Length: 317
Image (cartoon, rainbow, N blue to C red; front, side, top):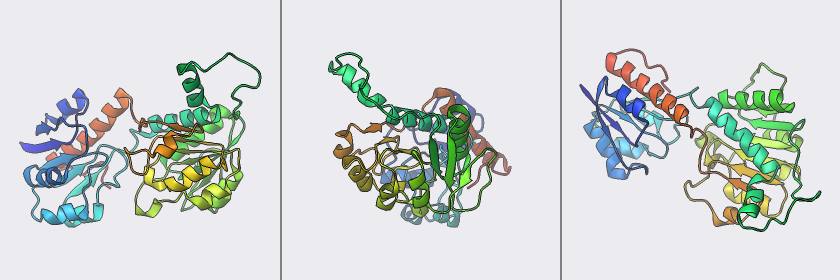
């Protein structure tokens, strides 16, 4: 039986499914793999199920020239922590878990839009600290979300799911920026440039994949183009945003607020962000529902079973 290494604890049904085809080792730590652990996983196992921030760089693959491992079945749709080109050159396949994360991540985007627009996190802090002195007509006035315009950066599965929620749930106008032409099955307008999109919307939502091509795609130029009442939301990857530029935009109130589920140097969150009242900060909750994480794990296991049985990989990247 082939040996499988799982880099973090996963829901029991996922591990049980993997055991039907593999001799499974589950690492008990919850932090990312260290440098030696990365290399040992390639040397000592036939397959590895890694996840976010397990940094399989070109250097790691180069250090293990005759790797026993032949598949990295990533737990998550994003795989910018894996150098796919280097893995492929080393004869190692890479898979991911698209689809399983779409609805959960889109729900978080809408939650952050509402929380930022209606100042929910700020209001909760007011209550928890005993500073709330009762309702009055002009208390904590925010932005009404229904009927506004949303701009979505990246119209993939998650972007489309966000667009549907905004249009059908809140009657919002949908505009989007995508690097290639894209048709969607709801009323939506594709805008030719990111700054042009930013200037036209009440909410700007980042839903692009991470990686070198999208690093700092949301930057000072984009924030400068946004309207002062507009809100920015990021449920993509932290490094798609120039965090320094975002902090400056929030501090100067050149935008009204932001809702973040991811951070450029995650899990480090700049104190400057923590100190601001006009930003909602979540601890990467995008897929944090038991059934979703189970579905993600089972999708990763399906890729592993296909590998073990010689079948085509369902989600090869």
